[in-house]
Amino acid sequence: MTGQKFGTPNPVPFRVIDARAGIDIDISVRCFGTYSIRIVDPIRFYTNNAGNFKDEYRVDEISGQLKSELLNVLQPAFAKISETGIRYSQLPGKTVELTNAVKEQLKDSWSAKRGISIDSVAIASISADPEDEKMLKQMQRNAAYTNQNLAAATLVGAQAQAMQDAANNSNGAAMGFMGMNMASAGTSASQLYQQAAANNNANTAGNTWTCPNCGTTNTGNFCSNCGTKRPSGKWICPNCHQENTGSFCSNCGTKKPA
Image (tube, rainbow, N blue to C red; front, side, top):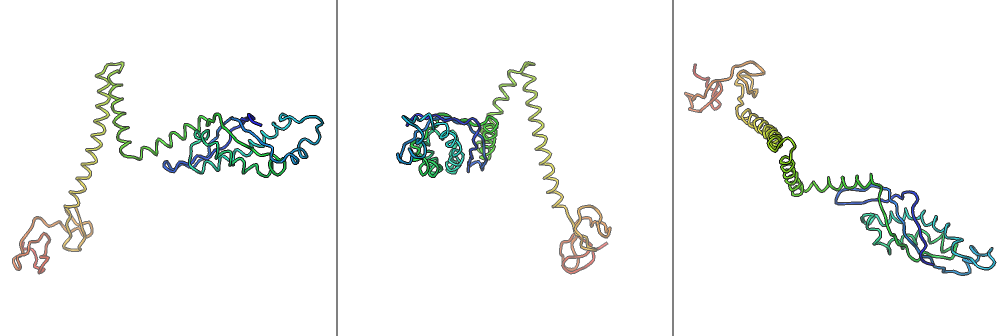
């Protein structure tokens, strides 16, 4: 019996797995399609379904119940297929996998009790909730931008678009490009500030001195620990000819000449 239609009056959960984007999340989907059933045990089918009918038993008598039971097993069937990492939009092309998953879920309730089995399931259309679809696209876009080449290409494209928008500025192209230059100048100023800070740190690191009195490392003109004034200039030890900067020779301990 072919051409039995079904549709989801309420959204059905579908698990989206995207290892590349690091996504593992449930979304809501709606779908409709057709399925076909086959009588595999006529005696059991007659006994459990058509025993109270006199002349004929039509598929309409049971199609409503079968449709409800089919919809109940779609969620676990979707979950099994989603583990392979496919997108929900690829489900129409997975009729064999979907049929097998539904068969597995309905094996006991249909084959064992009703004497029928599901022969095939075909999804004609499937769509996600608009909010869920928007969220997925944003998550995938953010994951794609972790690729530096793609991020750089996107930035170049955005800058090119900004130039076109500036040229079409209603207040005149000059005003538009002025705004771009101000934004660019702000970026350059920030970069210059960061560079100056880095240079200052480097200069400070190379301008330290050790207090000859207590051994504390300092950067100012006086020791932060004992207040000893920073020695001025280099001097040559008259005893061992060692070049020094502190008050005493680092080699022989001779005091700096007055």
